[in-house]
Image 1: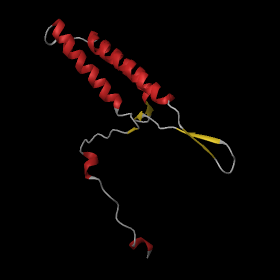
Image 2: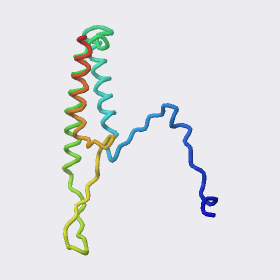
Image 3: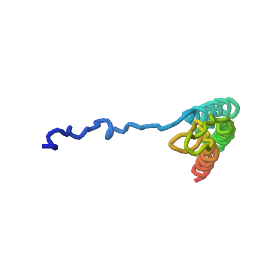
Length: 130
């Protein structure tokens, strides 16, 4: 019978173990790297100028870092999105089709991560004031 030829269902034991999967396309992986870099740099500069532990105790340095990262991500994402694609002509219709690489993180285009990072920074600021 047909049912005897089917393989048993595949189980993935790591699915329930808390493994995080990061989905990106193109250069979308740069979003967290840029954000982490700005957060790390801001942590160092703020603690050097205001004293050790100031960065952790206040929300505005995180807002500053994420706003700067947001601007950088927006600029990089916009630049990558405006690069020329490959134009091909479809044989059946004769219409031009343009193929461009997609640069996204979690299916969100890279340039839209800029405003998202700024909003995350605002959340850090609001949470810090409570």
